[in-house]
Image 1: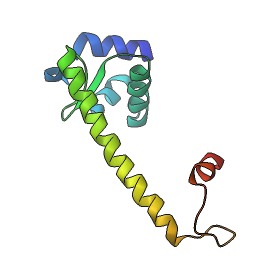
Image 2: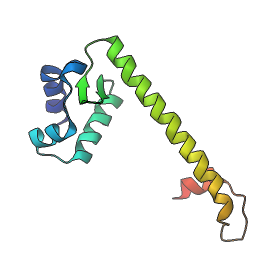
Image 3: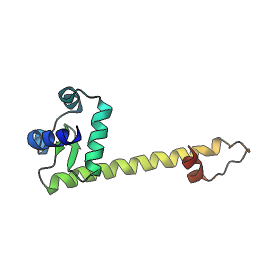
Image 4: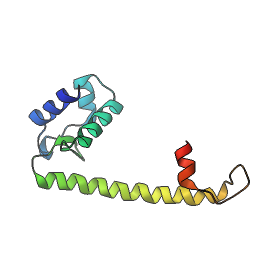
Length: 112
């Protein structure tokens, strides 16, 4: 399905002006929104220029569109990192099983 999804995006939705909402892709391929996100993520991981914007997903028509999508992701990454820092700070209110407030966060996250 990944290949068909990629071919479809490239043929019918190249360029931001031809962006398509996730709901349309769900209907077109009879898949869930989660599957759309997984497909897009895998295609991106493989180096395919699947972008997203206010109007949905699209295959990048040029470098400018690709850079805009990369910029949008970078902004989201920063916001997620800020939220993570806030949650790490909140750990001060939740001692571990030994009653310790300080812990090796990386080790604890790996164990989950």
